Length: 377
Image 1 (cartoon, rainbow, N blue to C red):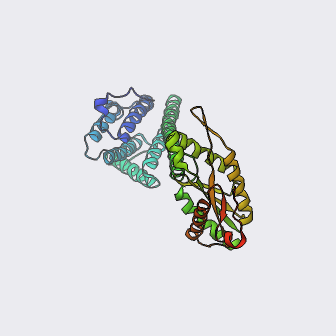
Image 2: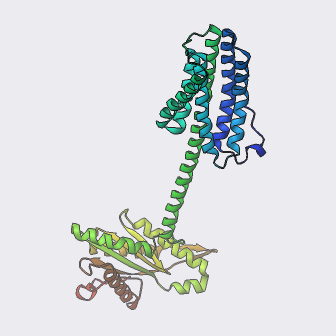
């Protein structure tokens, strides 16, 4: 049912409805020409009827296409062409006496076209246009009732309607598949964009060197964690960690070696962190471990384990083994502070005390003087 594609110079700028209807109209009208010609032959129609048949079903489709192509509003012009199709069909039905098979295929095909392009209103347009055609036929002679068609005409009508429905369904299938492919591509692009956005969000919250969370994520996560602990009545501890004399490592062995030491400490923190804990690199050689639902005594034990494990750690760089130590300040909610910045300030002060006392040690804020909980190497 598909004709040979038109040259691009003729197709360029032609609305898709004009192109599609020209193709379907041309092909379907050839089939109607055969069915109507069979009926005219069987009824002994005069020469003028044959001339009208050739003009309508072989020449008119090209004239309708030419008119629509040259219109400033091609879609609107094509809708008028469809109205004209129904009016002309009504004229033929009135003139021929409403042969049942011919009447059926004209009404069925017209109804499909009208409803597809106009919705429920298309049924009203079909009835109005068909009645107008029948009325025009009645101007010349009162319509008579001749419903019978011979077997050949009936078979040709069946063939025409079947091929028309096949072609229309094939158009719908092709458009549905094209739309499905477009939607699939859009879904793929959407999933790719969403994945990229997730990666960008993750990268924005991660330190690129160590893979630990950065200060932005700490600021976003610490306040909600404290609120949850306050509501549930559970403790929370923070370990503020600094690599001792890190500048000496960079000066003596280079920044690449220093980066390897930072990465080694990050891996150590991740090994000692629970799923609910938050390990961050705040910048430079400073790290923070947020221990959710952990009392301060257990946090000090964890800090000591980290300090001892890091002291025993050896990092190989260009054939050399590098060793380093760390200092750690511990602060806890609710004993020391109940706000994020205040809690971090307590941990920072405890870290400063650890450095003043000789480094490579763990110090808990405020309690070190009263309870003597400073833990030295």
